[in-house]
Length: 329
Ligand SMILES: Cc1cc2nc3c(=O)[nH]c(=O)nc-3n(C[C@H](O)[C@H](O)[C@H](O)COP(=O)(O)OP(=O)(O)OC[C@H]3O[C@@H](n4cnc5c(N)ncnc54)[C@H](O)[C@@H]3O)c2cc1C
Ligand code: SF4
Image (tube, rainbow, N blue to C red; front, side, top):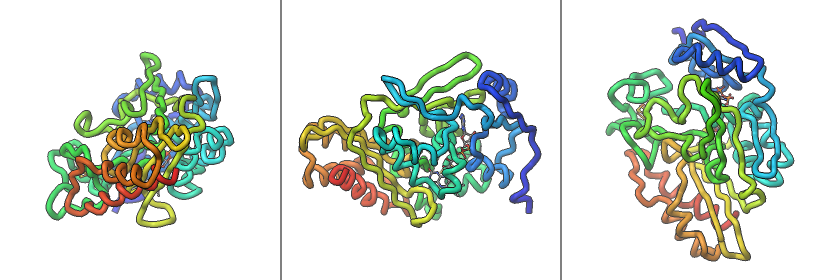
């Protein structure tokens, strides 16, 4: 009966990063960082998250925009997905990220949704989103991992009490591009490789990234080492219009003739973190890019998968996406 009516909160609108960091520290557990609001407002309207104060980053210009340096391309955390999709440097050198951003949701959501918000968004497990007291919400059960649990969208790998998945389309592209995340808090700045930035339930069940209260993601850096590589992004969802990925795949390859000299490949929708497919990389690296390698790579992608009752279909889906990524990139 209260759905769609947000509980009240204090709205704080810092105009510079220093002020935002100070406010985030002061607010502690009661604070909530807001970027484009596409994920956050769902939570507030459903009354399933009730922050005391919202720290709205929208007025901080230093968190917006794309800057090129000799070593990396830096994308401010508040840069919108539409800007990423249309940016000429990203399209020329890191098209993988432009392609992934273009597949997120709808044009309206991409116009306001930010890169930071896209990678920091919470899981879409519908039990959790409906406000139940499951493990991830601090309770002592998982409603999805039961014989009758509706777990069609849930994980193949890395279950640990929680079987939810990362729903982000840009996150696997950032893992494939070997990106670095820049995080600031009252103690200073710290950087994390994309693979360290995302955390599974075995590490921390109530969060999906390393970010704790008081932390602000300021930028994502794409290393020059992967600029201009050969890329592939594909997403499969239930609908062709906006929808979260059932499985997506993002690959970056360095080719020498038809030999794959190096490769990084990752996938969302199959684990609580964007899963780097290291077995696939080992199968492909140093080998010619042909149908046999692609098929072998596809088969190896599902090695170690433990499907739930209703998500066995994700195994051939993942295998086919990986085969296509290697063959068609
Ligand atoms: C209808 C709908 C469809 C969607 N479809 C897709 C899809 O197909 N693919 C997909 O990948 N996503 C999808 N999303 C998810 C997501 O809302 C958008 O991708 C969007 O990019 C989120 O960005 P935002 O800036 O609006 O995030 P916000 O809602 O502002 O923030 C999201 C989370 O990140 C945290 N956060 C944001 N910025 C920072 C920062 N700089 N530092 C620290 N924490 C931060 C917030 O505290 C919050 O917890 C969809 C969302 C909706 C509502
Ligand atoms: S999968 Fe995770 S988020 Fe979903 S009900 Fe289980 S514990 Fe909660």
